[in-house]
Image (cartoon, rainbow, N blue to C red; front, side, top):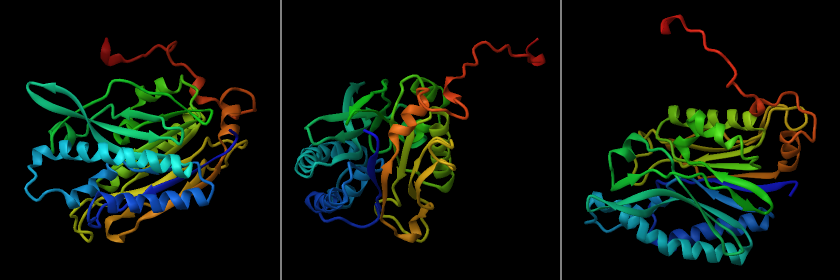
Length: 307
């Protein structure tokens, strides 16, 4: 595949949704739009499923939140898979808690991203590092994943990296060895600082790995107060910054969307040049620099404080 077209939905989590079927109908409307534009994929942000909490039982204990979202997710994923097959559009359904093992008699959950494709495949990726809120067990015990999954999608090598994971250099040094055509980062950042970390790292990784990096985040939180909440979302597609691909490394972008804006944007990223990036990365086109191929293992560290 030479070009790919992807819709990135920076979903607003603030509006109340009546029930799961209403939420799924809203998603289907977005999928129809993506299909009509000839898009190959629609991407939702991390914890897009948090909007389901607007129809959760009033007496749901806080500690059972993850379990309830997991149960809803099992129903939703079947419906989303049917949408993908019907409309011929791959759907990255953000992240949904997924039941993992039992520890000390308590059920634990992974923060798992799902990519559902028209051929019926379900690809997943677990978040590899936990935020302080996740580590504290808010809503249930969350555990981290332990594997990087490379996906074959339309002949492209694809990986999903979730929010905080985008910030860790050692992880990306491993990804740089995998000849990836497309990396997608579903995120949810609660402040502008988190947004800037995740999106800035995404742009840097596109340059470093000479590949396409798509990143998007949700706007707001369920039951929020838009005028005072700090949640920030957005969507961007970054490319290698090279004269053979892009002069600024930006293929599509919107400014950070604050909760007060009450926005619910879909960024249409058409004709992303994955083929040109692949040729650049693999030495089949002249590149100005090849940062990912540089190895620092031979360097000696001179540090007088260590002597």
